Length: 244
Ligand code: GLN
Image (tube, rainbow, N blue to C red):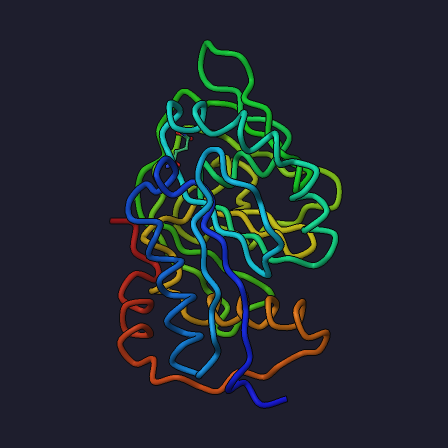
């Protein structure tokens, strides 16, 4: 199936609250990499009070504990719809605070748990140390097999059940600084601590997500054409292996 003229729909969840360190750059990357291939994108921002419609891909960014508290009740009220979207093959990408709310809960310091939407079997508890710095992750599903980004979180995330990590940390702390796991994946739900924003420096992961979203919509794997990624590849390579 020729990619030109195809369409995917993308929703950005709660960008007014969860968009730390320019996580919106991930949505811009997804949209541009579709448009550069002639793939049409239906895009909408979903803010507090909006209904959740069916989309092929949902994105949610990171945020400080305060913003997570402001979003969690609204997000929890959409849990059943989003679980149904997950089970229908929709793609999700959550960064840091958004990733934490993809699990069962996030327990900040000295506060009650923030209920998550259990898109993946994981939980997060606030640690005593803030993990800040560059991260390099070795994956087993991407080519090239690395992901690079920047972490800034105190939350410690633990994967359970059928949840798998995005990969192992080569540099940086990742989920909890102990099990060497970074990020999480279940079905087409992906979470990661990598800010940056992530996708501009990891175009291969952006295309992987776009391919999954197209497969969800059209029911078959669609091979994407190559884009001229020398600049993105240079940016990716410039971070690999570096802590600061
Ligand atoms: N508030 C969460 C933490 O500190 C998430 C932070 C973020 O999104 N960068 O772990």
